Length: 202
Image (tube, rainbow, N blue to C red; front, side):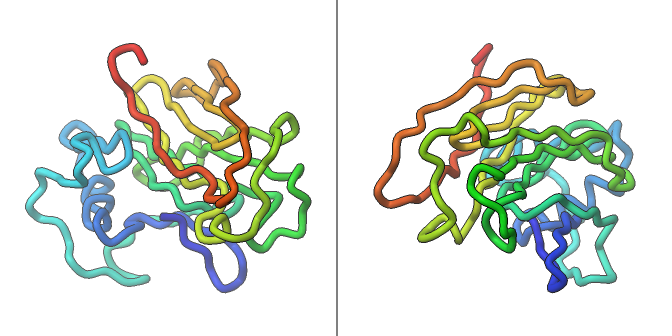
């Protein structure tokens, strides 16, 4: 998960969650040739397990943290790992602690260097052509607008940005395509949270 500091700046930390904490630390410390990728939500197996047997069970702000990196804003998606890169989504411009209007909402996909947390590239999808975006109230406030974890086949990264659509980027951050999705209003205003999966050429 993305973590926000008390000073309203947002940080992605490795490790980042209870069930993956030791995994992220271990993956960053071991050599890339032997590292296990984590290409989708809950990992390659889809059940959040790792074959590593020496994962740390304790951590704090000073121990078992490889690096941390500032983000443009908050989010509730999980990071994915592919080779020497880590990918993560977040949002900015509207909602949470922002004073912006709903049309100012932006979703971001960031690519970090796995070894040191350096940002390799960042891509942004705006909200200008989105119809019926869910306002920041009710259930949306629990997770925001970047809840969907991206997925990669090692060459292309695919991100579902809710009503802003689905986009694909190559390893260098070039946008390959971006398609809209259904924008009907749901009375419960849950927002979107489903993470994409890859199957065959779909």
